[in-house]
Image (tube, helix red, strand yellow):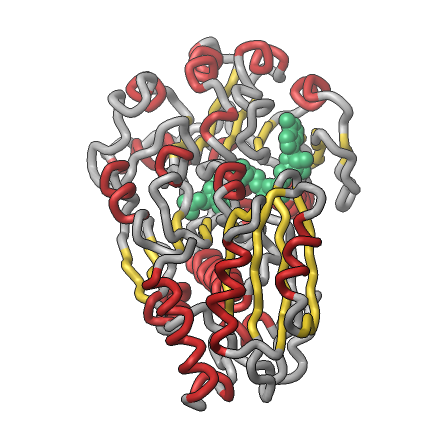
Length: 470
Ligand SMILES: NC(=O)c1ccc[n+]([C@@H]2O[C@H](COP(=O)([O-])OP(=O)(O)OC[C@H]3O[C@@H](n4cnc5c(N)ncnc54)[C@H](O)[C@@H]3O)[C@@H](O)[C@H]2O)c1
Ligand SMILES: O=C(O)CC[C@@H](O)C(=O)O
Protein backbone atom coordinates (compact mmCIF):
# COMPACT_ATOMS: atom_id res chain seq x y z
CA UNK A 1 0.00 0.00 0.00
CA UNK A 2 1.13 3.55 -0.65
CA UNK A 3 1.92 5.49 2.50
CA UNK A 4 -0.18 8.63 3.22
CA UNK A 5 2.95 10.65 2.40
CA UNK A 6 3.31 8.98 -1.00
CA UNK A 7 -0.33 9.57 -1.81
CA UNK A 8 0.06 13.16 -0.71
CA UNK A 9 3.05 13.59 -2.98
CA UNK A 10 1.12 12.15 -5.88
CA UNK A 11 -1.87 14.39 -5.21
CA UNK A 12 0.20 17.53 -4.73
CA UNK A 13 2.03 16.95 -7.96
CA UNK A 14 -1.15 16.25 -9.84
CA UNK A 15 -2.65 19.42 -8.38
CA UNK A 16 0.37 21.38 -9.54
CA UNK A 17 0.29 19.81 -12.96
CA UNK A 18 -3.39 20.37 -13.55
CA UNK A 19 -4.08 23.67 -11.84
CA UNK A 20 -0.95 25.74 -11.71
CA UNK A 21 -0.37 26.07 -15.42
CA UNK A 22 3.42 25.52 -15.22
CA UNK A 23 4.03 21.87 -15.83
CA UNK A 24 1.39 20.91 -18.38
CA UNK A 25 2.41 23.61 -20.82
CA UNK A 26 6.07 23.13 -20.19
CA UNK A 27 8.14 21.74 -23.05
CA UNK A 28 11.22 19.79 -22.09
CA UNK A 29 14.26 21.55 -23.53
CA UNK A 30 16.71 19.41 -21.62
CA UNK A 31 19.86 18.02 -23.28
CA UNK A 32 17.84 14.80 -23.37
CA UNK A 33 15.84 15.99 -26.33
CA UNK A 34 18.62 17.74 -28.18
CA UNK A 35 20.88 14.66 -27.90
CA UNK A 36 18.21 12.14 -28.71
CA UNK A 37 16.91 14.12 -31.68
CA UNK A 38 20.18 13.40 -33.48
CA UNK A 39 19.76 9.62 -33.42
CA UNK A 40 17.12 7.37 -34.97
CA UNK A 41 14.19 6.84 -32.65
CA UNK A 42 11.66 4.09 -32.42
CA UNK A 43 9.24 6.68 -31.08
CA UNK A 44 8.99 9.94 -33.00
CA UNK A 45 9.62 13.17 -31.12
CA UNK A 46 8.90 15.23 -34.22
CA UNK A 47 6.33 17.38 -32.45
CA UNK A 48 6.53 18.99 -29.06
CA UNK A 49 5.11 16.82 -26.36
CA UNK A 50 4.01 17.39 -22.84
CA UNK A 51 6.83 17.12 -20.31
CA UNK A 52 6.00 14.38 -17.86
CA UNK A 53 7.46 14.25 -14.37
CA UNK A 54 7.10 11.56 -11.72
CA UNK A 55 6.53 13.98 -8.90
CA UNK A 56 8.18 17.20 -7.81
CA UNK A 57 11.47 16.85 -9.73
CA UNK A 58 13.38 18.26 -6.78
CA UNK A 59 12.52 15.00 -5.03
CA UNK A 60 14.53 12.86 -7.45
CA UNK A 61 17.80 11.96 -5.74
CA UNK A 62 20.72 10.69 -7.79
CA UNK A 63 23.92 9.27 -6.35
CA UNK A 64 26.85 9.48 -8.77
CA UNK A 65 30.04 7.56 -7.96
CA UNK A 66 33.43 6.97 -9.61
CA UNK A 67 33.95 10.39 -11.17
CA UNK A 68 31.12 10.12 -13.69
CA UNK A 69 31.58 12.78 -16.38
CA UNK A 70 30.26 16.31 -15.80
CA UNK A 71 28.08 16.06 -18.93
CA UNK A 72 25.85 13.74 -16.88
CA UNK A 73 25.80 16.08 -13.89
CA UNK A 74 24.71 18.93 -16.13
CA UNK A 75 21.85 16.87 -17.57
CA UNK A 76 20.61 15.85 -14.12
CA UNK A 77 20.97 19.38 -12.71
CA UNK A 78 19.08 20.67 -15.74
CA UNK A 79 16.20 18.40 -14.74
CA UNK A 80 16.17 19.78 -11.21
CA UNK A 81 17.24 16.46 -9.68
CA UNK A 82 19.27 16.42 -6.45
CA UNK A 83 22.73 15.12 -7.32
CA UNK A 84 25.21 13.74 -4.80
CA UNK A 85 28.60 13.34 -6.47
CA UNK A 86 31.63 11.26 -5.40
CA UNK A 87 34.94 10.92 -7.24
CA UNK A 88 35.62 7.37 -6.00
CA UNK A 89 33.49 4.31 -5.29
CA UNK A 90 32.17 3.93 -1.73
CA UNK A 91 33.00 1.29 0.87
CA UNK A 92 30.20 -1.28 1.14
CA UNK A 93 28.73 -0.03 4.43
CA UNK A 94 28.58 3.56 3.21
CA UNK A 95 27.06 2.49 -0.09
CA UNK A 96 24.33 0.57 1.74
CA UNK A 97 23.50 3.69 3.79
CA UNK A 98 23.40 5.98 0.74
CA UNK A 99 21.49 3.65 -1.56
CA UNK A 100 18.56 3.39 0.89
CA UNK A 101 17.37 6.83 -0.07
CA UNK A 102 18.11 7.41 -3.75
CA UNK A 103 15.97 7.00 -6.87
CA UNK A 104 18.91 6.53 -9.22
CA UNK A 105 22.54 5.57 -8.92
CA UNK A 106 25.29 6.11 -11.48
CA UNK A 107 28.43 3.96 -11.31
CA UNK A 108 31.34 2.79 -13.46
CA UNK A 109 33.15 -0.54 -13.26
CA UNK A 110 34.30 -0.58 -9.63
CA UNK A 111 31.04 -0.37 -7.69
CA UNK A 112 29.49 -3.76 -7.13
CA UNK A 113 25.70 -3.64 -6.92
CA UNK A 114 25.04 -7.12 -5.59
CA UNK A 115 21.77 -8.45 -4.18
CA UNK A 116 23.13 -7.72 -0.70
CA UNK A 117 23.47 -4.02 -1.57
CA UNK A 118 20.44 -3.65 -3.83
CA UNK A 119 18.00 -5.05 -1.29
CA UNK A 120 18.55 -1.95 0.86
CA UNK A 121 17.48 0.32 -2.01
CA UNK A 122 13.88 1.01 -1.15
CA UNK A 123 13.30 3.94 -3.57
CA UNK A 124 15.59 2.88 -6.39
CA UNK A 125 14.06 3.19 -9.87
CA UNK A 126 17.05 2.96 -12.16
CA UNK A 127 20.80 2.22 -12.31
CA UNK A 128 23.17 3.82 -14.81
CA UNK A 129 26.45 2.07 -15.65
CA UNK A 130 28.51 4.87 -17.15
CA UNK A 131 30.57 2.32 -19.11
CA UNK A 132 30.09 -0.71 -21.35
CA UNK A 133 30.40 -3.52 -18.81
CA UNK A 134 27.42 -4.35 -16.58
CA UNK A 135 28.92 -7.42 -14.87
CA UNK A 136 29.32 -5.40 -11.65
CA UNK A 137 25.51 -5.30 -11.23
CA UNK A 138 23.24 -8.21 -10.32
CA UNK A 139 21.03 -7.57 -13.34
CA UNK A 140 18.48 -10.31 -12.59
CA UNK A 141 17.97 -9.21 -9.03
CA UNK A 142 17.64 -5.57 -10.14
CA UNK A 143 14.95 -6.58 -12.66
CA UNK A 144 13.13 -8.57 -9.97
CA UNK A 145 13.05 -5.39 -7.89
CA UNK A 146 11.65 -3.46 -10.86
CA UNK A 147 14.91 -1.55 -11.31
CA UNK A 148 16.01 -0.96 -14.91
CA UNK A 149 19.74 -0.84 -15.67
CA UNK A 150 21.22 1.23 -18.51
CA UNK A 151 24.76 1.38 -19.92
CA UNK A 152 26.59 2.89 -22.86
CA UNK A 153 27.20 0.00 -25.26
CA UNK A 154 29.80 1.53 -27.59
CA UNK A 155 30.76 5.11 -26.69
CA UNK A 156 34.25 4.07 -25.59
CA UNK A 157 34.88 1.24 -28.10
CA UNK A 158 37.11 3.36 -30.32
CA UNK A 159 39.19 4.51 -27.34
CA UNK A 160 39.86 0.89 -26.33
CA UNK A 161 40.73 -0.13 -29.89
CA UNK A 162 43.21 2.75 -30.17
CA UNK A 163 44.84 1.79 -26.86
CA UNK A 164 45.28 -1.79 -28.04
CA UNK A 165 46.90 -0.62 -31.30
CA UNK A 166 49.34 1.42 -29.23
CA UNK A 167 50.05 -1.62 -27.07
CA UNK A 168 50.74 -3.89 -30.05
CA UNK A 169 53.51 -1.57 -31.25
CA UNK A 170 54.73 -0.90 -27.70
CA UNK A 171 55.15 -4.65 -27.09
CA UNK A 172 56.70 -5.36 -30.49
CA UNK A 173 59.33 -2.67 -29.90
CA UNK A 174 59.77 -3.21 -26.12
CA UNK A 175 59.03 0.50 -25.65
CA UNK A 176 57.97 0.13 -22.02
CA UNK A 177 61.36 -1.29 -21.01
CA UNK A 178 63.35 1.23 -23.07
CA UNK A 179 61.40 4.08 -21.47
CA UNK A 180 61.91 2.78 -17.92
CA UNK A 181 65.64 2.40 -18.64
CA UNK A 182 65.94 5.97 -19.94
CA UNK A 183 64.10 7.30 -16.87
CA UNK A 184 66.82 5.71 -14.77
CA UNK A 185 69.69 6.99 -16.96
CA UNK A 186 70.33 3.79 -18.96
CA UNK A 187 71.03 4.05 -22.73
CA UNK A 188 70.21 0.63 -24.27
CA UNK A 189 70.10 0.90 -28.08
CA UNK A 190 69.06 -2.64 -29.16
CA UNK A 191 67.10 -4.25 -31.99
CA UNK A 192 67.15 -7.87 -30.82
CA UNK A 193 63.58 -9.29 -30.76
CA UNK A 194 62.14 -5.91 -31.72
CA UNK A 195 59.76 -6.23 -34.68
CA UNK A 196 57.61 -4.34 -37.15
CA UNK A 197 53.93 -5.18 -36.85
CA UNK A 198 53.44 -5.17 -40.62
CA UNK A 199 52.75 -8.70 -41.85
CA UNK A 200 52.20 -10.10 -38.34
CA UNK A 201 48.96 -11.83 -37.33
CA UNK A 202 46.61 -10.37 -34.76
CA UNK A 203 44.20 -12.83 -33.12
CA UNK A 204 41.11 -11.15 -31.69
CA UNK A 205 39.02 -13.09 -29.19
CA UNK A 206 35.53 -11.54 -29.21
CA UNK A 207 34.64 -9.70 -32.43
CA UNK A 208 32.05 -7.29 -30.99
CA UNK A 209 32.12 -3.51 -30.88
CA UNK A 210 35.76 -3.27 -29.81
CA UNK A 211 37.18 -6.36 -31.51
CA UNK A 212 35.77 -5.40 -34.92
CA UNK A 213 36.90 -1.76 -34.61
CA UNK A 214 40.38 -3.00 -33.73
CA UNK A 215 40.33 -5.32 -36.74
CA UNK A 216 39.97 -2.34 -39.11
CA UNK A 217 42.75 -0.36 -37.43
CA UNK A 218 45.13 -3.35 -37.39
CA UNK A 219 44.65 -4.01 -41.11
CA UNK A 220 45.55 -0.38 -41.79
CA UNK A 221 48.94 -1.20 -40.23
CA UNK A 222 49.37 -4.14 -42.61
CA UNK A 223 48.51 -6.83 -40.05
CA UNK A 224 46.61 -10.03 -40.86
CA UNK A 225 43.56 -10.43 -38.63
CA UNK A 226 42.01 -13.64 -37.34
CA UNK A 227 39.14 -13.67 -34.89
CA UNK A 228 37.33 -16.16 -32.74
CA UNK A 229 33.80 -15.56 -31.45
CA UNK A 230 31.04 -17.79 -30.11
CA UNK A 231 28.72 -16.43 -32.78
CA UNK A 232 29.26 -16.10 -36.51
CA UNK A 233 30.02 -12.50 -37.32
CA UNK A 234 30.65 -10.83 -40.67
CA UNK A 235 34.35 -10.16 -41.20
CA UNK A 236 35.46 -6.59 -41.82
CA UNK A 237 38.12 -5.99 -44.46
CA UNK A 238 40.06 -9.18 -45.08
CA UNK A 239 39.83 -10.51 -41.50
CA UNK A 240 38.98 -14.21 -41.12
CA UNK A 241 36.83 -15.90 -38.49
CA UNK A 242 38.33 -19.16 -37.20
CA UNK A 243 36.19 -21.90 -35.75
CA UNK A 244 38.23 -22.77 -32.67
CA UNK A 245 40.14 -20.82 -30.06
CA UNK A 246 43.08 -23.19 -30.53
CA UNK A 247 43.36 -22.33 -34.22
CA UNK A 248 43.54 -18.64 -33.34
CA UNK A 249 46.16 -19.28 -30.65
CA UNK A 250 48.31 -21.47 -32.93
CA UNK A 251 48.42 -18.89 -35.73
CA UNK A 252 48.62 -15.48 -34.02
CA UNK A 253 51.63 -13.34 -33.11
CA UNK A 254 49.46 -11.12 -30.89
CA UNK A 255 46.38 -12.36 -29.02
CA UNK A 256 43.96 -9.80 -27.62
CA UNK A 257 40.79 -10.41 -25.57
CA UNK A 258 37.54 -8.46 -26.07
CA UNK A 259 34.91 -10.67 -24.43
CA UNK A 260 32.54 -9.94 -21.53
CA UNK A 261 33.12 -11.30 -18.03
CA UNK A 262 30.98 -14.45 -17.86
CA UNK A 263 31.33 -17.90 -16.34
CA UNK A 264 32.50 -19.14 -19.79
CA UNK A 265 35.21 -16.48 -20.18
CA UNK A 266 36.72 -16.95 -16.69
CA UNK A 267 40.39 -17.89 -17.22
CA UNK A 268 39.71 -18.22 -20.96
CA UNK A 269 43.47 -17.92 -21.37
CA UNK A 270 45.28 -20.13 -18.88
CA UNK A 271 48.29 -22.52 -18.97
CA UNK A 272 47.00 -24.82 -21.79
CA UNK A 273 46.11 -21.83 -23.97
CA UNK A 274 49.50 -20.16 -23.44
CA UNK A 275 51.12 -23.47 -24.33
CA UNK A 276 49.13 -23.51 -27.59
CA UNK A 277 50.38 -20.07 -28.61
CA UNK A 278 53.36 -19.43 -30.92
CA UNK A 279 56.74 -19.09 -29.24
CA UNK A 280 57.53 -15.42 -28.62
CA UNK A 281 53.95 -14.21 -29.08
CA UNK A 282 52.23 -11.49 -27.05
CA UNK A 283 49.06 -11.34 -24.90
CA UNK A 284 46.81 -8.30 -24.47
CA UNK A 285 43.79 -7.94 -22.21
CA UNK A 286 41.65 -4.80 -22.01
CA UNK A 287 38.36 -6.62 -21.38
CA UNK A 288 37.86 -7.87 -17.82
CA UNK A 289 40.39 -9.08 -15.25
CA UNK A 290 38.76 -12.50 -14.89
CA UNK A 291 39.45 -13.45 -18.52
CA UNK A 292 43.16 -14.18 -18.06
CA UNK A 293 44.78 -16.43 -15.49
CA UNK A 294 47.55 -14.03 -14.50
CA UNK A 295 49.69 -16.48 -12.44
CA UNK A 296 49.72 -18.80 -15.49
CA UNK A 297 50.67 -15.85 -17.70
CA UNK A 298 53.54 -15.00 -15.34
CA UNK A 299 54.85 -18.57 -15.69
CA UNK A 300 54.55 -18.45 -19.51
CA UNK A 301 56.53 -15.18 -19.62
CA UNK A 302 59.16 -16.58 -17.26
CA UNK A 303 59.49 -19.67 -19.46
CA UNK A 304 60.10 -17.40 -22.50
CA UNK A 305 56.99 -18.72 -24.26
CA UNK A 306 55.23 -15.32 -24.16
CA UNK A 307 57.41 -12.36 -25.15
CA UNK A 308 55.37 -9.70 -23.42
CA UNK A 309 51.95 -8.63 -22.23
CA UNK A 310 49.80 -5.53 -21.92
CA UNK A 311 47.12 -5.62 -19.23
CA UNK A 312 44.54 -2.92 -18.51
CA UNK A 313 42.20 -4.92 -16.25
CA UNK A 314 42.75 -7.11 -13.18
CA UNK A 315 40.76 -9.53 -11.00
CA UNK A 316 40.93 -7.00 -8.14
CA UNK A 317 41.19 -3.30 -8.85
CA UNK A 318 41.71 -0.49 -6.31
CA UNK A 319 38.63 1.52 -5.27
CA UNK A 320 40.39 4.83 -5.87
CA UNK A 321 43.51 6.39 -7.35
CA UNK A 322 46.63 6.71 -5.25
CA UNK A 323 50.18 5.56 -4.60
CA UNK A 324 50.48 2.02 -3.26
CA UNK A 325 46.96 1.06 -4.36
CA UNK A 326 48.17 -1.64 -6.79
CA UNK A 327 49.96 -4.11 -4.56
CA UNK A 328 50.38 -7.73 -3.48
CA UNK A 329 47.71 -7.10 -0.92
CA UNK A 330 45.21 -6.59 -3.74
CA UNK A 331 46.53 -9.33 -6.07
CA UNK A 332 49.06 -11.80 -4.69
CA UNK A 333 51.01 -12.07 -7.99
CA UNK A 334 51.67 -8.32 -8.20
CA UNK A 335 55.42 -8.14 -7.36
CA UNK A 336 56.24 -11.08 -9.60
CA UNK A 337 54.39 -9.57 -12.57
CA UNK A 338 55.91 -6.09 -12.30
CA UNK A 339 59.43 -7.53 -12.14
CA UNK A 340 59.12 -9.17 -15.60
CA UNK A 341 60.40 -7.65 -18.86
CA UNK A 342 58.09 -6.20 -21.52
CA UNK A 343 55.04 -5.98 -19.30
CA UNK A 344 52.81 -2.94 -19.92
CA UNK A 345 50.35 -2.27 -17.09
CA UNK A 346 47.66 0.42 -17.24
CA UNK A 347 45.00 1.23 -14.59
CA UNK A 348 41.81 0.26 -16.47
CA UNK A 349 41.96 3.30 -18.76
CA UNK A 350 40.92 1.64 -22.04
CA UNK A 351 37.78 3.77 -22.20
CA UNK A 352 39.19 6.75 -20.37
CA UNK A 353 39.39 9.49 -22.96
CA UNK A 354 37.72 12.90 -22.89
CA UNK A 355 35.68 11.96 -25.98
CA UNK A 356 34.46 8.64 -24.61
CA UNK A 357 33.65 9.84 -21.10
CA UNK A 358 31.78 12.89 -22.33
CA UNK A 359 29.72 10.81 -24.78
CA UNK A 360 29.01 8.18 -22.11
CA UNK A 361 27.89 10.88 -19.66
CA UNK A 362 25.38 12.23 -22.15
CA UNK A 363 24.13 8.84 -23.33
CA UNK A 364 23.57 7.23 -19.95
CA UNK A 365 22.21 10.36 -18.26
CA UNK A 366 19.79 10.75 -21.17
CA UNK A 367 18.65 7.14 -20.84
CA UNK A 368 18.11 7.55 -17.11
CA UNK A 369 16.25 10.83 -17.51
CA UNK A 370 13.93 9.40 -20.15
CA UNK A 371 13.22 6.43 -17.91
CA UNK A 372 12.61 8.59 -14.84
CA UNK A 373 10.52 11.23 -16.61
CA UNK A 374 8.77 9.21 -19.31
CA UNK A 375 9.11 5.55 -18.35
CA UNK A 376 10.90 4.74 -21.65
CA UNK A 377 13.02 1.61 -21.07
CA UNK A 378 14.53 1.39 -24.59
CA UNK A 379 18.27 0.67 -24.21
CA UNK A 380 17.94 -1.01 -20.82
CA UNK A 381 20.08 -4.15 -20.44
CA UNK A 382 17.86 -6.06 -18.00
CA UNK A 383 14.33 -4.90 -18.72
CA UNK A 384 11.75 -5.35 -21.49
CA UNK A 385 12.21 -2.43 -23.88
CA UNK A 386 9.05 -0.34 -24.00
CA UNK A 387 8.30 3.20 -25.18
CA UNK A 388 5.18 5.24 -25.86
CA UNK A 389 4.98 8.41 -27.93
CA UNK A 390 4.61 11.54 -25.86
CA UNK A 391 1.40 13.15 -24.77
CA UNK A 392 0.08 16.16 -26.68
CA UNK A 393 0.94 19.48 -25.10
CA UNK A 394 -2.69 20.39 -24.51
CA UNK A 395 -3.76 17.04 -23.09
CA UNK A 396 -5.15 17.40 -19.59
CA UNK A 397 -6.26 14.97 -16.93
CA UNK A 398 -3.96 12.33 -18.37
CA UNK A 399 -1.82 9.94 -16.37
CA UNK A 400 0.91 7.64 -17.62
CA UNK A 401 0.92 4.31 -15.78
CA UNK A 402 4.18 2.36 -15.53
CA UNK A 403 3.51 -1.08 -14.17
CA UNK A 404 6.20 -3.75 -13.76
CA UNK A 405 4.95 -7.23 -12.95
CA UNK A 406 5.75 -10.92 -12.98
CA UNK A 407 5.16 -12.41 -16.41
CA UNK A 408 2.20 -14.69 -15.62
CA UNK A 409 -1.17 -15.16 -17.35
CA UNK A 410 -4.06 -12.90 -16.41
CA UNK A 411 -2.17 -9.84 -15.14
CA UNK A 412 -3.12 -7.56 -18.03
CA UNK A 413 -6.76 -8.51 -17.67
CA UNK A 414 -6.68 -7.41 -14.04
CA UNK A 415 -4.77 -4.22 -14.79
CA UNK A 416 -6.97 -3.23 -17.70
CA UNK A 417 -10.05 -3.83 -15.60
CA UNK A 418 -8.73 -1.17 -13.26
CA UNK A 419 -7.72 1.22 -16.03
CA UNK A 420 -10.84 0.75 -18.12
CA UNK A 421 -12.88 3.00 -15.85
CA UNK A 422 -10.99 5.72 -17.74
CA UNK A 423 -10.05 6.12 -21.37
CA UNK A 424 -6.98 4.08 -22.29
CA UNK A 425 -5.37 6.34 -24.91
CA UNK A 426 -2.57 3.95 -25.71
CA UNK A 427 -0.60 1.16 -24.11
CA UNK A 428 2.35 -1.07 -24.83
CA UNK A 429 3.66 -4.05 -22.94
CA UNK A 430 6.60 -6.39 -23.34
CA UNK A 431 8.27 -9.11 -21.32
CA UNK A 432 11.74 -10.49 -20.78
CA UNK A 433 11.91 -13.76 -18.87
CA UNK A 434 9.94 -13.43 -15.66
CA UNK A 435 9.59 -9.66 -15.88
CA UNK A 436 6.97 -7.72 -17.85
CA UNK A 437 6.56 -4.00 -18.19
CA UNK A 438 3.43 -2.11 -19.21
CA UNK A 439 3.18 1.54 -20.19
CA UNK A 440 -0.28 3.04 -20.59
CA UNK A 441 -1.59 6.58 -21.03
CA UNK A 442 -5.05 7.00 -19.60
CA UNK A 443 -7.22 10.08 -19.92
CA UNK A 444 -10.33 11.37 -18.15
CA UNK A 445 -8.55 10.97 -14.86
CA UNK A 446 -9.61 13.39 -12.18
CA UNK A 447 -7.38 14.33 -9.33
CA UNK A 448 -9.51 12.30 -6.97
CA UNK A 449 -9.06 9.17 -9.15
CA UNK A 450 -5.29 9.05 -8.75
CA UNK A 451 -5.15 7.62 -5.28
CA UNK A 452 -7.75 5.06 -6.22
CA UNK A 453 -5.86 3.90 -9.36
CA UNK A 454 -2.63 3.70 -7.42
CA UNK A 455 -4.16 1.71 -4.57
CA UNK A 456 -5.91 -0.73 -6.89
CA UNK A 457 -2.78 -1.37 -8.96
CA UNK A 458 -0.74 -1.68 -5.81
CA UNK A 459 -3.06 -4.40 -4.55
CA UNK A 460 -2.70 -6.57 -7.68
CA UNK A 461 -1.16 -9.96 -7.07
CA UNK A 462 1.80 -9.99 -9.46
CA UNK A 463 2.86 -6.36 -9.19
CA UNK A 464 6.58 -5.59 -8.84
CA UNK A 465 6.49 -1.79 -9.01
CA UNK A 466 4.23 1.05 -10.07
CA UNK A 467 4.92 4.60 -11.09
CA UNK A 468 2.43 7.20 -12.20
CA UNK A 469 3.62 10.16 -14.30
CA UNK A 470 1.69 13.31 -15.20
N1 LIG B 1 39.41 -1.60 -20.59
C1 LIG B 1 38.37 -0.83 -20.67
O1 LIG B 1 38.37 0.31 -20.21
C2 LIG B 1 37.14 -1.33 -21.36
C3 LIG B 1 36.35 -0.40 -22.05
C4 LIG B 1 35.23 -0.87 -22.72
C5 LIG B 1 34.88 -2.21 -22.66
N2 LIG B 1 35.64 -3.07 -21.96
C6 LIG B 1 35.29 -4.48 -21.90
O2 LIG B 1 35.58 -5.06 -23.17
C7 LIG B 1 34.76 -6.21 -23.37
C8 LIG B 1 34.23 -6.24 -24.78
O3 LIG B 1 33.46 -5.09 -25.05
P1 LIG B 1 32.63 -4.95 -26.41
O4 LIG B 1 31.95 -3.65 -26.33
O5 LIG B 1 33.44 -5.24 -27.59
O6 LIG B 1 31.57 -6.11 -26.19
P2 LIG B 1 30.60 -6.73 -27.28
O7 LIG B 1 29.46 -7.29 -26.51
O8 LIG B 1 30.32 -5.77 -28.37
O9 LIG B 1 31.47 -7.92 -27.89
C9 LIG B 1 31.84 -9.05 -27.15
C10 LIG B 1 31.98 -10.20 -28.11
O10 LIG B 1 32.48 -11.31 -27.37
C11 LIG B 1 31.84 -12.47 -27.85
N3 LIG B 1 31.96 -13.53 -26.87
C12 LIG B 1 31.24 -13.73 -25.73
N4 LIG B 1 31.67 -14.82 -25.08
C13 LIG B 1 32.69 -15.32 -25.81
C14 LIG B 1 33.53 -16.43 -25.65
N5 LIG B 1 33.41 -17.27 -24.61
N6 LIG B 1 34.47 -16.67 -26.60
C15 LIG B 1 34.58 -15.85 -27.67
N7 LIG B 1 33.79 -14.77 -27.88
C16 LIG B 1 32.87 -14.51 -26.95
C17 LIG B 1 30.43 -12.02 -28.13
O11 LIG B 1 29.76 -12.89 -29.00
C18 LIG B 1 30.67 -10.64 -28.73
O12 LIG B 1 30.78 -10.68 -30.12
C19 LIG B 1 33.71 -6.13 -22.27
O13 LIG B 1 34.11 -6.98 -21.22
C20 LIG B 1 33.80 -4.74 -21.75
O14 LIG B 1 33.37 -4.61 -20.45
C21 LIG B 1 36.78 -2.66 -21.31
O1 LIG C 1 35.09 3.44 -16.89
C1 LIG C 1 35.13 2.35 -16.32
O2 LIG C 1 35.28 2.22 -15.10
C2 LIG C 1 34.93 1.06 -17.11
C3 LIG C 1 35.44 1.12 -18.52
C4 LIG C 1 35.19 -0.15 -19.28
O3 LIG C 1 35.72 -1.26 -18.64
C5 LIG C 1 33.76 -0.38 -19.64
O4 LIG C 1 33.20 -1.42 -19.28
O5 LIG C 1 33.22 0.47 -20.34
